[in-house]
Each structure stands twice: as C-alpha cells, then as structure tokens.
Image 1 (tube, rainbow, N blue to C red):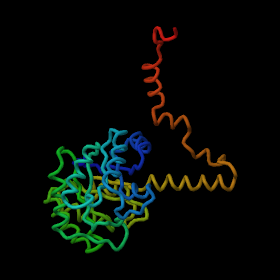
Image 2 (image 1 turned 120 degrees about the horizontal axis):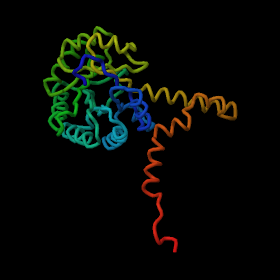
Image 3 (image 1 turned 60 degrees about the vertical axis):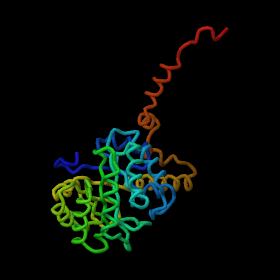
Image 4 (image 1 turned 45 degrees about the vertical axis):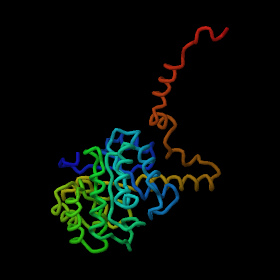
Length: 285
C-alpha cells in the first residue's frame, strides 16, 4: 500500500468502537497514538505507559478492523532487548506495524519544545533490534526521528538515512516545519515517509493532495478523534449542568439505531437465536 503513488490516510483511534467508524468511511488504515493512550488513562505523554497496556489496547483496536493498524511504540519501552520483545508482542496483538523513536526515555510529546534525542548509535540499535526481532517480514518497522526540533533539518535527513540503513522500512520525521522539509526528507531516503498532521502542532495542517505532491506516503491524524470527542463531551456536560437536561444536545448525538448498527447488534442477535432458540426435548418434564 505504501509503495503506491497515493498518500494514504490513517486517522487515529483510541477505542475499538471509533475504529469501526474509520473503516466504514473507507480510510486506508488506523493509527494508534501513544500520547492518546496515555491521555485517555489520565496521564501526560511522558513515557508512563508500559508495553502490556499499549499492546492490549492496540490489540483491542486491531481486532475490530480489517485495516492495517500502526501503533506508536515510543522508545520501544527500554533497551534494545526490550525493543525486540515489544515488536513481538505487537505482532502477537495483530498490529501491522509500529514506530520506534529516537528520544531519551522518558520521552516528551513530539510537538513540544525541550526534547532530548539519543545519540546515533543508540537510535540505530533500537531500530536494528526491532527489525531483527520481527517474525513477520510484513510487520512494518518505522523509525521516528525527533532530531529536527533539536538540531535542524540537515541532521534529520542524515539520521533518517542512517535509520533506513539500520533496517527501518519507513521514516516518521517529527515536527517538519513546512512542505519543503517533507520534500527534503523525500529526497533523502527511498522508503515511505509519514506526515503527522496533528492539530496545534509545529506543522500547518496540509491537505492530503499537498502532502502527496511532495512525496508523502502516509498521513496520520493522531489526536483528532479524541479532541473531537472530548470537546463534544465537555459541551454536553455543560448543557446538562446549565439546562438541567441534555435535550438541547440530543441532535448532535449518535442515535441508538446507529450505535446498534456499529456494534452489529443484529448480527449477534441472529447468532444468538440460531444457537439458543430451540426447545430442548424432555426438559419440561
């Protein structure tokens, strides 16, 4: 998919149910953000979540869709040996790929200032460990580099090349400033590259066409659905508090019928009656 000419779009899901909406709308894949998983648990994105939590939630999301799911594996949750285990656990959970970043552990959200980046040797070892540990050659090992915000664009393209040499199947250059920087990254490596279109970040929110024109292969919208959902929750709570009823907010809600459709209530219902809806002979004596 990533080898094609089209910029593929991977909206970010943090619940299995929201994933069904993404598949229904015909998107290319699903992205699972580490920041969002941490935030959803009430934590900031500073490396507090552990591999079992991330693998479990990512697996719950991957289970409900046929789409490829790419998960944020932070720094791989430890040293190269931990990175190797991370990749295998994510394979077990049904993910199609993950990205490993070159920040210090504990890390910071990629669009914040004051990030620390590990040296090249450490970054390379993480990626090599991930690439060698996978048992499925189609499991995508993406390398994310945060060095652009620390040492500039030239350092980012140099590091991207080294990470590809270390076995990265794709590159996630974090916090690119503009389209020309994506273009420079495209020219530097011959593997797919990702654009992070997160709101309130360092990059302008470019269209899929603009990004495709500069050679971007995958676009993620990591926090968009969570921000939209929380905004709606906050407004409806405000309505209940001020009006004494949710009545005014009901037109904005997903209907019961639509919810039942999303969870395939009917399919389960038919399965139920098919299995249990018969009389057991001799039981009523």
